[in-house]
Length: 302
Image 1 (cartoon, rainbow, N blue to C red):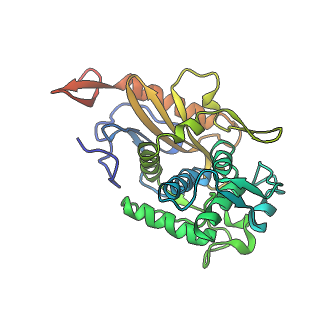
Image 2: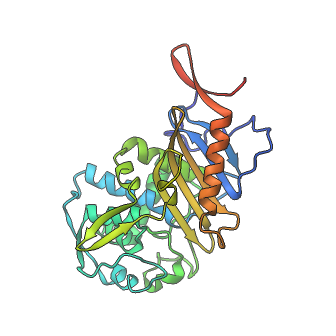
């Protein structure tokens, strides 16, 4: 059985003959221990990913800590570029008025509250400039076999918000694009290489600075029955309402990606409803069985 990790294009589901159609433009569901694709819908077409970009940014932060380039207590100065974005409510929801924070504080802000400026500050700390950091992100994707992604920044913002800080040679309205499969592969590597990330992404609220608290945009963490413990939402005009999730269901470790959920502009729960329905589909149709001592994903009733 092929495993997802290390593969850019695991075989997509071939026996998907029922009528389920997730309410999103692109989607995929993968069981991580086997790499089995349990559902896919136009999962290999690159499209806007918005703040789902930040799971790759987070991976690069963990990798930099692993390599000894930074520590969790390393102080990060906030340059004028990310600081000036914090006064624009459209692009950043965490004030960084102190102008100096630890790596851990900024990663929390990046993953829990989707703070764009925190992601940019981390990129600048690790690579000197955001554009150099983007080059390392792209190189990491190529190591994993992902060659169809287009990255311009560490946050997922549209270039129109970044002014003169745009990636060299990029267009004024360029935006990060990847496929649902690409996002699933990144999430798989992040969770397997740095499972402690789920200790961050499963939190609905955490203290940040003084009386300030970081609050999640992941509404599936509150008052729902699914075993979701992360990972990241994303919303832009291009990407629509999107969500990459990790969930533990019936002994399966699942990654689901929903991109551009239908009616996402009018219903803030649309991406979570679509994810919930996708998880329902998976748990109703797939299960893990032990065959010759090796756990394998099989279609129920097969």
